[in-house]
Length: 144
Length: 151
Image (cartoon, rainbow over all chains, first blue to last red):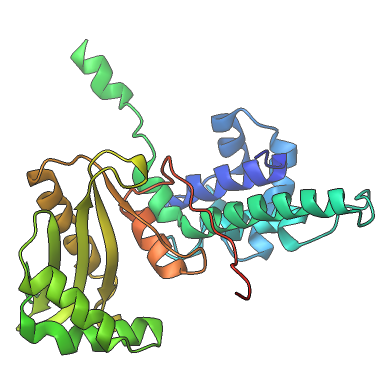
């Protein structure tokens, strides 16, 4: 499954912030960390603020902070904000209902159901729990 | 104040009514006959690889888990299956389910299997999220089905 760029950026940002809800990060910080466009990410961040998943912190050292519940928010909650198909929007170019197109639609619906169930079952906390831990650079340097 | 200690033990015959009640709370459907048969097969009789575990706090049951080692079913090498796990709504997010799953996995390991498997309805967000939070992911098998219609 291929996610829209905005969805990927949103998942990076939300997970990065959810990993430490006390921490504030700027759009530039996150963009640099993932090597993505800060301009595109800024638009994504505004959408995430409106959805209540993150909050904007003003002032010196301002940026964004996670404001959801890591045990409740799922990957689907983020994904459905940016994936038009996630909200059941029909493809304008879909063929009218021939038996073959209907059979293909059934296969697509089956895949969509599986995708939705999978994304809805993974909370941010679960994903972060099993994300590979980064090597502590300092520790690595000390061990050399 | 520290939480009261959770104890995990094998189910005994007198747990039956509490298990029926807890299952009904979660599923909305009382299945006394089903659980009586399960108790007969998993509690009263001893079979290799079958486990019916209870978690209790201060003598009160707060959760249970049922599982079994199945061999070559669906072509699969020996594997531990979890058929049911249930935690009292008042005690959720307190580590009861995690403790039960870890306990049954230890039994499976001790009996020589290295994989645990379960099947969950796509609509059962609570259990799906629970198993995911324990590191379980989609496995190499797919469940397929079709309606048999009218006979």
